[in-house]
Image 1 (cartoon, rainbow, N blue to C red):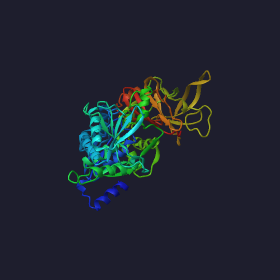
Image 2 (image 1 turned 120 degrees about the horizontal axis):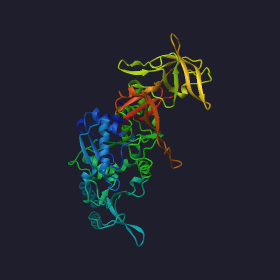
Image 3 (image 1 turned 90 degrees about the horizontal axis):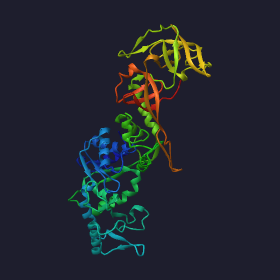
Image 4 (image 1 turned 30 degrees about the horizontal axis):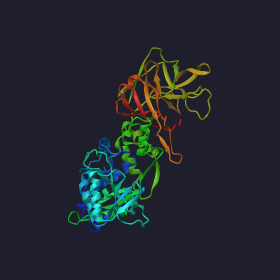
Length: 506
């Protein structure tokens, strides 16, 4: 792995930064589950820690009790473990609420912060610049004496600077809701911009890696650290480095949209296979390596770009086409009668020198694998084409039975010593057929321009047919290749989830 982030870190080392002081962190907000977009930040932080043989913290940025809870903390921890990453320390921004509060008071004393309050009578905001009055109001905010949205603490920087984030941003606000970790101890909470950089400084993080959307926050990040910097406490100032955000198209990656779908009962939970959450991928039988390989492929730059979820499908297919065991499945079966095969005879055909499947006079094939009117572009079964039944015989059709203008039966014969067979198709013996249920889905897509969610009815249960003898040998929680169809996850008895379809080139 070599990218501009590694070059930047090596540059810092060459300029005197001790390798012993290298330290990274991944800092998710516990207000949602992790999705595919998060893995880029996860991967680069944990990979750098391994590459430089240094420590990494998993720190939950839990500064807003309105949206955060322990449910998401547990989900995120499980997701990160599933990806195979290990951290040295588990921490929470809420661990530092007291020191963040004390540092905010110091900002007031240095006239770097002031109280702003809202007057209901005049319906206007007023600023307080007297130090003692600011400390008095800030203490009352902490004691819960004021209502929400009435008092805030703002950084005293400038209202004239072009960077919006430097225009006297709020650093503390009143939120009268119990915190999942600190319970009712606090009713004022620091904002992201105040808490994030200071938490990095407290934890002695050397490099704070974040997506490019936080680039405009960087001047404020550095300014706040300079405000509270104490060489005795920590001589190292964390350095923010931005990389491009992973913008996934053709699917949803927004927490707000996930929650909207659950609220409207379009989906039951975050494991719905139509989503791009890590829980969804786990539910479909994905291995963590599939996701990691995808992240490696897209790489790390500072240039924002969109990438289709289909790129992940391509990477997954590369792995599965080599590994996934093949089974024969039909979706729309039609009966075939092999005229020159004994009526009650069962021939057991060995597969992969391990399992056997039965072949009989009566079998089923896929309805679309037969064509009555022959043409030169169709290579499957017809009244003129020879085709091979997978693992078994070469056949050709010679007669059909119709009912209400639809083909109901096809009569065939087995042939030997036929060369240059252009097509092989799947089949299932008539007396050994077994129904299976398949969850078939498409990713739910959100059109930002029209502010509309599409494909909300994109999860359907369909029926397939396979061999009842062979399916007994399948292992639950494995992925299988349905011959010529695609890849499917066997998640419980007789039940599969579609992962991806192959292109139909036959």
